[in-house]
Image (cartoon, rainbow, N blue to C red; front, side, top):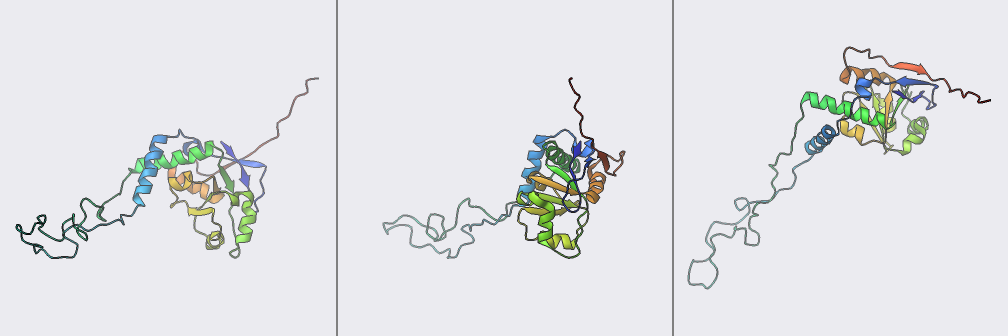
Length: 229
């Protein structure tokens, strides 16, 4: 699969990058992707909702009034759930654990499926390594061009502090390093920009060990149209 290749100024280069099929051209397992996304969202969920049961609310255990002779309904405690200010029955507690897990093999296949899905839809582009002498949001926006208006994921090999600081004020840009990116970030982006140096690390993390990890550049020749005369 050939994808667009840009220099570090944001200009498209004639040659294209050929992506390996074992990472970017594999069969997409949509069932696994759905499970992986549910797992990611569940693991980021906080059990903040909490109610007090009758043993946690304030009030005494003394019987409010005697059992018989008052004409009122029987009552054993002011902390009863049917009383105002009493405990809550079957309410949410912060002890609920929403955590889910995936096996190591499932996580790897989910990453490959998410990369392959975005590649099949033409949403992956390769950029030469972006180097800034000092942080500059304006320069980064110029490099990205029209891509800065979309929801973009930029994957770099290692965290470049100047690049990180340049991206702080671009709301639509999500900057991640190879060993921290996840399938939710990939699927939740309109475009995925992979820096050239990060491509080799992606192959090392999720690709087949039998193939070369170095990216392959191919010159694309314009098609010639034969004359019908």
